[in-house]
Amino acid sequence: MRRIHYFIFIFLSFILLFPCYAVTERGLSVKPISPLGTEVKGNQWLFVIGINTYIYWPHLKTAVNDAKALKNVLLSRYYFDEDHLIELYDDQATEKNILAKLRYFAKKVGKDDSLVIFYAGHGHLDSITKEGSWIPVESDVADASAWITNYEIKNYLRIDAIKAKHILLISDSCFAGDFFRGLRGKLPEITDKIIIKAYELSSRKAITSGGLEPVSDAGFGNNSVFSHFLVNALNENQRPFLVPSDIFPYIKAGVVENAEQLPQFGSLKDTGGQQGGELVFFLKQESRLKDLSAESLERKRELESLKEMEIANEAAKKKETEEIAKRKREIDTLDAKIEEMKKRLGTASTNNDDSLDAMYAMVQQKEQQQKLIDDLKKQREAEAAKRRAEIERMIAKNREKRIAEIKEDIRKYERIISSQFGMDMKEEAWKNLTNKYPETRGLTVGDIFKFNIKTGLIKEIDRDERFVAYENRTVLDTKTGLVWASKDNGKDINWGDAKRYCDNYRGGGYTDWRMPTPEELEGICDFGKWKKGYLVTKLIDITWRSVWSSEKKDEFATFFDFHYSFRDVAIPDVPKRALPVRGGN
Image 1 (cartoon, rainbow, N blue to C red):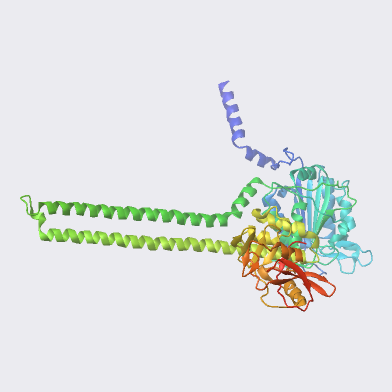
Image 2 (image 1 turned 30 degrees about the horizontal axis):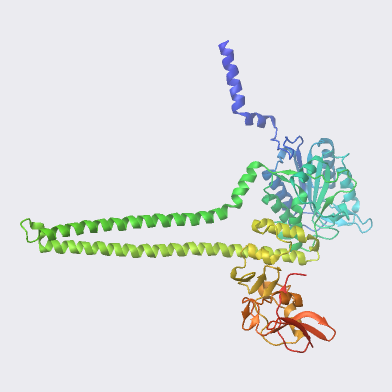
């Protein structure tokens, strides 16, 4: 009986100690945890198609790499596995094979499963039917019979065909916007509640690289512009649950900045998805930890380098201090010997060691010890100065690097919102920008001036009660939020020239300067502040008493007198000063 118990114990121990082995042998995959806190029931399927080498159509450069790049990031960072992956590249991507795989999914994919379909290849808009199509590898240019229309694709993606709970179609091809013409809308703020809802409701969504226009095959390295930003978004994500609507603004902003095309995101019409449902990408925990480490590695190394230098500095100081203390103790010992010798001289206790030579040797030794101490002190000061200089150099280098990065991000943001394709993306682009710099969160959308202050891009150099002067020659009125030029134009000009001066002013790198209103000029007049005889803060240099305002009535224009503190009107040809302002209405 004991022998039987022994074998049972060994068997149970093997199972407990090697559970992963058992799972691997059975071919089972690890299941992610859903936003509800329960284990995900279904499987995550992936179907990627990439075609570079067409028989009749022009060859493409990046389509196969785009498909493989997406496959790699989903397999490595998210809960997708090779048991639920189908790939078709170049000569494999025929009409027959593509449709056969879609039929395979209709038979195999379960109601709790999710499916991502990615197509990179030629797309075409039929001049007769006005419908978009995928172009398989063997399709003739003139013969539409081998094209796979968007209508056919959507038929397979209906909830009663491929029965997956979630399907996300990603199409990096021309004229892909035909999948959901006119269905774009403002995306919701992504919260835990939104993600739970997205997971619980069924969905049929699509992201396309463009609308009803050709899209670029060129991009970054071996990927198209669209696929570059798609894969980059999936690579950089740190959230355990990611929905497409969360990364689409980033993809759209990147593509608009770098190509003449407008990506789209929305629901596939007439396929059975529910409003609010989305496919959820489940980030592997080990990927999240690894990427968090990699993301901060460079900054961590910089901080560690500074820390090591500080530690080395302290250790060197301690060693030098100990060495100096040792030398001082030796000198003190010599002083004691000399003192004893002095007491013995001329007395009966005088001995052979009290000779003139012995005294001379001790004095020499003391001089040498003092010289060593002096040299050590000089060396310590020189080394300390060198270390301080190196630390300051590294801090300055890090600051320059950060400033360059901030300026580049601001340039991209301003480029996006100034483009005709990015006008509806201002809030999403601003959110993306401020999320990268947490200290700027909560700022009003588009407030680049305060963004620059929060990130340290511009430094404060002086204060005068409510006024703050910055190194870029601007002055902020903290009471009104207006930003003033730190100095007027410096010479007499008429009203028309003053308006042109203010409108074209580019101080601080900003482009939205204007003429101030009479009320705004009156607002910076301070009866308790005299500067060069004028009532104004010391931070704003008014070189003459009168400044033009933007108000113009009939043949007269309004100005403000900073000497006597009143507003008045004059004909526009009278010479006065111009003082640009930005912000406000």
